Length: 227
Ligand code: ADE
Picture (cartoon, rainbow, N blue to C red):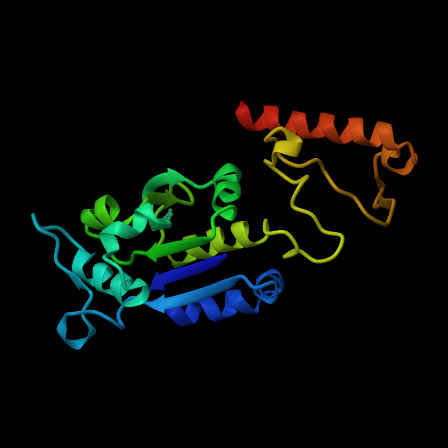
């Protein structure tokens, strides 16, 4: 998978690319490339934004700037791009990112993530240059970069082999293996800490009972979230 992240802060992604599962994914041939949204701007002095029509605070990233950045990277007319690959604009008001969407995106051969700043993108970016508008939660971030990192992290760890040996993304919170429920609690040594004991069943060696206990705890947590 190739993930290209269009951002005004490409250097922020150096940290992400140093993390183990991202390096593992890159070692397997997947590529995470930050692309400088400013580099191909047609405006003077590296300008990328403008004041909103109708007035109001803040600046808006221009549609022609995003168009130029996409054209410089992919060559083709950027309005054709959403028909060819997922182009995801990050915005607080978008479709909520969840495990199902992470799984869906992990099956794509390539992803383009567009990080807004200031008041976000001109709406025509969402309408004509993106295939999806995605939010990581109902709160406003200073820009799409952290949201893009969340998506990269959640998607890359689903690629086979990107987690270390013995780790698996199959049976974890919100996965189909757990019927979309949060994961069950985990314990490790010591078996007793300040009078708090690990549940006996986990030390019993009875795998069927362990499985049942875990499924019950997971369902319990799910029910608590739904309340
Ligand atoms: N940009 C600003 N806030 C955001 C959010 N919650 N999710 C995605 N992108 C954003």
